[in-house]
Structure formats: C-alpha cells, structure tokens
Image (cartoon, rainbow, N blue to C red; front, side, top):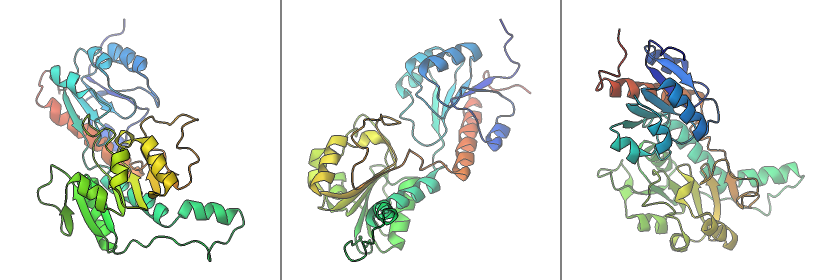
Length: 317
C-alpha cells in the first residue's frame, strides 16, 4: 500500500485545471479523475486519495462518493451551479459546498445573447438555406428586438449582464428573482407568472431546485405571448421538453435556443434533435479560455478559504 502524500489531496473531477488555479493550490496534491468520470471512478479515487477537497468539473457528487471520503471538508464547484452536488448529504457531514459565483458570468451572458439573436434573426436557418443555394430576401422577415420586452427568470451575475445588454438594445426588461430587492436601473421586478406572460424573449438564469424543476410546463407556455422566444443557458430541468416541443409546433414559440439539457449529452434519439426553430449548443456558454481560468481560480480560492476554518485539514508549512 502506497504511503499517503505529504500534502493533503484535492481531487479534480476533470482532466485539467488552469495553471493559475494550480498556483493557488500549490500546497496541495492534485489528483485528476479524467474527462468523463462516473460514480464508480470517483468512489475509487476518493478511497485511494482520501481528498480534503473536491473540485467539481464533470459528473455528479453523490452520497456514495461523499461517503467514500474520510477527510473531505469542502466541495467546490468549477462554475456557478451546485445542482450536481448532493448538498443535503454534504451538510449532514459538515462539508462546505462552494460555487465560483460570477466567474463565468460574462461568457454565459454573451452566449445567451448569441442564442437570442440566432433565434430572432433566424441565423442558423438562413445559413442552411444559403448553403443550399436559396436566396430568401423577399420571403423571410426576422424579428426586430428594439421596443420588445425581455423577461429574465434569475437576476444574478449572469442575468444582470443580460439585462444590461437588453437595455442597451432598447428593450424593456422585466425580471423575477426572489432574492433581489433592488434591481439594476431600467429593470422592473415582477412575479414569475407576470414575467412569463409579458416577455417577447424569455431567458432563464436561475438555479435548478426541487421547487422549480419543470417550471416551464404546458400551463406556463399557454401564458406566454404568441410567437415568443425562449432561451435557456441555465439548467435543462427547468423546462418540460414535451411542452416546449408542442409550443414550437403550434407556433406559440417562434423559436428556442438551448445550451442546457436534462440529460447531457442528449441521447441520439432525443426528440429535440432536428426540430425546426430550435437552436442547440452543447452546454458551452461558460466554456471560454477566460472563464476557464476564472472558474478554476474561484474554485481553488474557495477551497483555501474553507479549509482555513478547518486547521486540521489545511496544509502545513
């Protein structure tokens, strides 16, 4: 049996970490789980390395994985969403759960607008038509956004950036976020049902919880404006896919742009594939070189800060 490393171990559920983040964790031994670790892989690695911290890039951190760790003190998300972590088990064990809040806000906000504009301006459809030899100038009209209402569900770091761009484009911006009491300038707070009903463009920027899973169901789509646009760069579980497909087929939705899915990657026979008016991207909104560095550094600093409250787990100098 190999000797325990002199340094405490941080397990990364991925194949790499930004050099700047590695520098923050210079007093720790880093162990990498690879690009697609499953639960068995992580249980085995936890049993072997006994990490004091886990940086979550890919995969889920389940009760079984947490139970395999004897010395675990902090689980740090390489990003903002912690829905892939069993926070209840972590809390019961006294394990801190942290997120690199805001680290990928610029990247995701930009990708949100890429999807909004792709939907409003029929970018992917017209591109395919042009490559097929068509010239649709006389027959196709795109959507002008100035003067329309942008509705946001979630007004955190990402939502606030999306709002600022919408305001700059001359849109009216309304938002629902139960944790925001003082919205940014030119943003009007409404109830969630009011936002859904008033938005010409509805964009999701909230975490996935047990309470809001499937929040955009048939009843929600029925409340929406005819010809609305839906964009989701948050979590796939927020949308009832079957209800969304019905809304697209009926014309209730003009178009939708999705960067997140309930199952990732979606299976080959998933009904979302090949649907007219639906623009898809592979959960890549936060995947930029700058965001990679910022998320890594944020996750690393969260570990250092959390372990400062656990002297027995912190590295010795």
